[in-house]
Image (cartoon, rainbow, N blue to C red):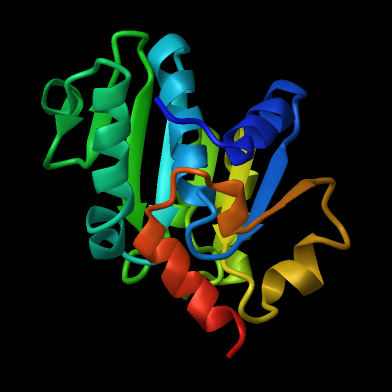
Length: 192
């Protein structure tokens, strides 16, 4: 399994007991993939309830969940044996349960059950501060957030100044496994 320094920095913050780990990174930085790798390691060995959320379930299904299943394969696990397709959950032999859900159109899920670990993917996309606050409040352990730094949003006004956190900044240079074509496309955009 290929691990970047972004994985290492997230693992270190998590192992140090950080309650809020924020990943700010551009395209190809490995921020999302690295968080998913860490969560897969945690779920494989520890009985935890983990929620992975984003603004919409289709968004998760076309990106994060595909990456998630590749990571499970890399760990020698069979995603098909772990997955409940109806519930969009994965249950591990450790007793861990990882659930995926979209917020848009189902804000009531933010008021739902408690969890040990929360990961909100692309928290700057159609996720309000109120939804973050409800989900985070119901998280007993650690909350991970990731976003692309294209504009300021509620995180900058309501979270960074007031919440104890670890901020991990990354870009494509932190990911030595980025395909060369994607690296070249990013470099071409750099000067624009």
